[in-house]
Structure formats: C-alpha cells, structure tokens
Image (cartoon, rainbow, N blue to C red; front, top):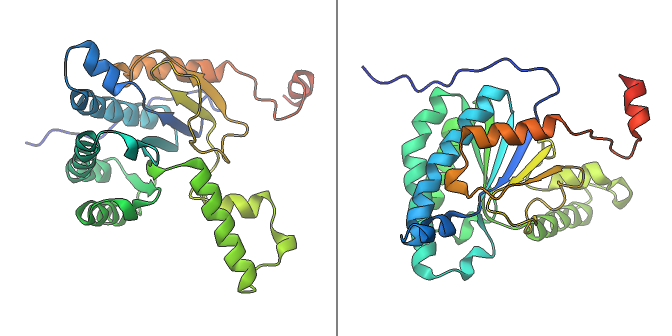
Length: 254
C-alpha cells in the first residue's frame, strides 16, 4: 500500500497567520562547506527544507508561499553549480508533482524561464498545467527572477497597453501596476523570511514588500525545519502591522 502523503491541518487563531509568506532560501553552500562537502550537497539538502516548509504552510493555513530559488544574478555562479541547480529543479518537478496533486498545491513559476534549457521549460509548463486547479496552497517558485526585472516588465506591459489604446495613462495607479507584475492576482507577502544570516532583500519582490514584515534568521536553509518556521510565524503573530496608522488607532478599531 502506498504511503499517505496528504498533509493534515492544525487549527489556529484567525489573523495570527500570514496569508502570503516569501522566503529567500540562503545558506546551502555554507552549510555544505562547513561539513567539508561540495556546495551542491547543500542544495540537495535544502530540498528537504522546501518540503518541510510547504507542509508547515498547509498545516498553519498559509495560502501563498513564494520561494526565491534562482535569481537573475545567480548566473554569475560557477557553470557547474548552475548546471546542477537546473538539474535539481528538473528532478524536483518530476518527483513532486504527484505530491502537489495529492495535497492540492498549485504551482506557479515566476521569472524569465526562457533562459532555461528547453526540457526544463517544458517540465515547468507541464507542472503548472497539471496543478492549475488546485486551491489549497499556491506555491510560487521565483526562478531567474529579479525585483527590478519584474518592475521593468510591468512598465513595459502597461506602456504597450497605452500604445494599443487598451488603457488610458490616467488609469494607471498602484493597483493597475501591481496587476501587471508577476504576482498579478495574488496578495503582497505578509511575512518575508531570509535564512543564512544576511539582512537584505536582494532584489526579491521589490514592489510587493512595501509593508511586508521582515524576519531574518542565522539558521542556514538546510537546517530550517518545522520548528524554525513556527518561530518565524510566532514572531509575525506578535507584531503590530500599522500600515501608517498609530498603535492607538489600531487598538480602538478592535
């Protein structure tokens, strides 16, 4: 009998959990080097943390998870490492689509995938198509993605719409611009997590993180398990998100 891979949910207090979590998965290489292993060993070990984080998102009721898997700047890394990352991405897609179906996870890949090998591009499109109707969790993988690239692409889309007469320049507001970005119909991240100790957002979702709560942890990505994720959620739940208002105003609204 095949093992049951469906993830159960745990009840949580409404409002205590972010709807959208975005993560920079940093520290794979350092994790491997600290153990005297090649950097690719860290990338492979990090796959288990991806699976654990997805499971925790479902258990906690998170609706959108965006993972920064490969930035547009990562092409500068050694060719051997880049090739291995492409292979790892391909094998993960081939292996995990059935699990996504079982757990009703919808896959979306954001970024310029045209630079990837044809086989990987086909696998990405096939995986997205196979999971497009799943509603339990939207899993976004940012691959060959950059926040400035995203903003530039949105500006070009809107410029083309103005040129074709589909939209008047006066109709372009923040909502229209956000809709033209890769996140399109999804909410902005509520919680941004970066593992590995660095405290910067590294060109990730620049437009969308205007009011996102930032959480930095020294834990390297392969060591970022369920407990580390819960600590991030607990930290988020204890923060007061004011969106320009005062704390007194928020308390008066309760």
